[in-house]
Each structure stands twice: as C-alpha cells, then as structure tokens.
Image (tube, rainbow, N blue to C red):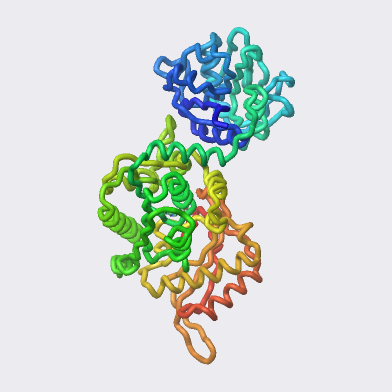
Length: 515
Ligand code: XMP
C-alpha cells in the first residue's frame, strides 16, 4: 500500500513524528521529508496528501523556512498545522502577525463550519492544544474561516475547492481531544486513502530497502536482547540472512538466565538465520569493577568495557560494510537529530558506537518508529511475546541496581531476588498494570535471626513504578499480599539476604533506577 503515500513536510516542529504516527494509526503509509525537499521530488512520489508541520520560526521573516506557491497548486490536498497553517496563508496572500500574548495550552475551539470535511464528527466547542505567538490576522483569498477561539480569530481555515486546510492548533498531540479524528478525516475523507496499510507493509518495505542498500555487504549489529536491538536483528536477518553478524556481550550484569534466553532465540539453535557471537565477558567486567563504588564511575567503566569487547569482536570479523543500530524515534528527538527540530539533550544510544568500528555506513531501520510501533513490528516478525514486551532494562544492567561495589556474589543475590519478584508479580497479574519493576541490592547489612542463628546480611529493595514518559514516575501500589509473598520467598530462597524493603520514592526526587 506504499502507493498510497502521505508526505509530512518537516518545518522543525517538535511534534513532526507524532503527526506521522497519527497518520500511520489511520493505516495510511507516511513519510517525513525536510521542507527543503524540492517540488519535483515531491511530484515524483505522487502523494495522496501533504501535511506541513509546525515549527519555531515566524513565516514572514526573510530567512524562515518556506515553500513555493506551486506546492498548493498540484491538486494534491494539503493540511498545514500551526507554522504550516500560517505559512499556507502567508504564501497564498493572507497575513500573519505577532500576537500580544502567546496562546498556549488546552484551549476551547469553536467550530464555525461544522460541515467542514476535516471537522466531520467533531464536537463544538472542542478542546485543542495551542502553542503559538504568531497568528493569522487575515486569511488568503478563496479561504473561509472554519474555527476560532476567544483569542484567535482564525483557529482553522480552508479552501475546500482546492482541498487546502489550515489548522492553527496541534491535532497530533493527545491534548487535542478530537485531533486523531481530524487527521483521519483529512487522510481518509479528503485525501481518499483507503486506510489498508499495516505494519506488515512496513516490514516488507524495510526488508526490500535493506536488501537494496546492503547488496553483498557484511553487516554488524550489537545485540543487547532488549526490544529495539532484537527487532532490528530479526528484520535484518529476514532481509540478508547470514550476511548479518550479531555480537551479544554478556557483561555478567544481566537478569537471571537472560544471557541464555537471548542465545536460545538468536543462537544457532534458534529460528533465525544469522551469525551469533556471544561474548562471555563476565569476569572481565567484574575485574574492572572491583572496588569501584561511585555510580557514575561504574557506568563509565561498563560503557567503556563494552566498546573494548565489541571492538575486539569487530576486528575478528574483518571488514564490515554496515553497522546496524536499533535507534528508535524518541532517541533521535532527545539527541536533537530529529530532522529540523531543536536539540533537547544528548543520548547514549545515538551516535555512540561509530568511531571505533571500521564501517561504511549506519543502518537504523527503526529510526522513525515509537516504542509501541517497534513492538508491533516485533509481533509482525513473529518474535516471542516475552521478548517483545520486555520491560526497559538499562544498558549498564544490574551494575546500576547494586549500591556500592559490584561483585559476582552480589550479582547473584540481586538476580535471584529479582527473578522471584518478577515471577510473583507476573503470577498476580501485576505485569499488566505496573510499568517497570525490579529488585535492587542495597549496600546495607543488618542483624537478623534465621532459625536459631544470628545473621548479618544484605537488604533487598523492591521497586515498582508507573510512568508515561520516564521523566517522572510514581511508586506503584503493589498489593500487600504480593509484597509479603515476595519478601518471604526472597528471605527463604536467596542466600545472603535477610531483609526486604519496598521503595516508595517517586521521580523526582528519586530516579527510577537504584544506584
Ligand atoms: P532513571 O533511573 O534515569 O531511568 O529514572 C529512566 C529510564 O531509563 C532507563 N535507564 C537507562 N536505559 N541505559 C539505558 O538504556 C542507561 O544507562 C539507563 N539508565 C536508566 C531506566 O531503566 C528507566 O526506564
């Protein structure tokens, strides 16, 4: 269904990928291009519709991103959002000016034209997300105003005859209650897409593109066993089979049995065609971490050691043509690599590997997808659900769930306690309710009594949090009965532990991990 393409032209807004995602949710294939993409290229792609995103600039300023008037004369439906709406008006003869006050946040929008194609089935008033300084003070000739707010005379405008639609607010964000409806109205009713595209088409297209790009080349991937790198590995394996080598570094800081589980799926006895190299680097890591207590230092050592191990393996393989990274869209945005959008913060997963392995090019097949979309691709590829729905697990692993020095003995304790905790949470159905949960090992030892014996052992901390964006989190309400059972099993079954505590701290002031 790639013949039914909707193009999102990126003008530097923070939500541009969200626009694409909403279009994909309508089962319509969508690609994002920079506003610098020339008109001939756009014509050649023959899109069914074009969406212009928001952006941080003022369209009336000389060096602001713009587009030629001809874009609106192709006979292809165009929807401008925020900056895109202002630009449409500006280019077609309307007027955009700076407002006295910024209109920001959830805003009541009154629909003036209830039979507008984009507002079909939308209530009035409806709550929308506004974020703009500039406003459309005069619409372009041939347009009519279709919605307004108390502060904004033109919240939406259209020229239905030419299928041009301008919306000042952001229908792509969840705060705009009926935004998905508006976008689906545009792609299905105005652009007349059939809405039959599915993730299997993404898989098909990606496989084809990977094959074309790689040819006979050799490809290397660092497999962590996490969702993103696993999905990337299977996608590549389906595309190029044993031209792919996956290096899996077992740093001895994985969850209980995790190394073997990864090997079962990706190793020689698993269902996929690829070269799998498991490096058992446990002892190396423990040696490097000996005596180190400071958390940042631990993170650094674990990261650097990974680079050394991976580099050694890459050298053994010889020339590598392509390096695969399981980068997903949120990584890209956070690193400020998201097309035209502004830098927010640097991220460990993006651009981290390349300088120490000799290779020609990077392949990032999941770069445009959100986490839940990656999971859908994973299911589409037939990857076991257990792996697809894995909880987030940090790169430095249990290294940042053990307070103080990391030793093989402490790793064993936290692995065993964590396995019990996960088992009981799953059995109680809490795995469906709680976002992320794990056991950590405090560095505290205290006196206890077991049988008739005095003990002087470690305390395990149980953590369970709910979070939407990982920037903030709250401790989850785990039923007392479940906690009690976990406590009792840990004390009975995990040697070296005589106390179990539940961590109630939210983030902020705490963090999700325990280091
Ligand atoms: P914090 O502890 O910062 O964690 O509240 C937020 C989320 O990020 C995960 N996390 C990491 N993931 N490498 C990763 O891949 C890391 O170094 C790392 N540190 C934290 C953490 O598990 C949580 O989901």
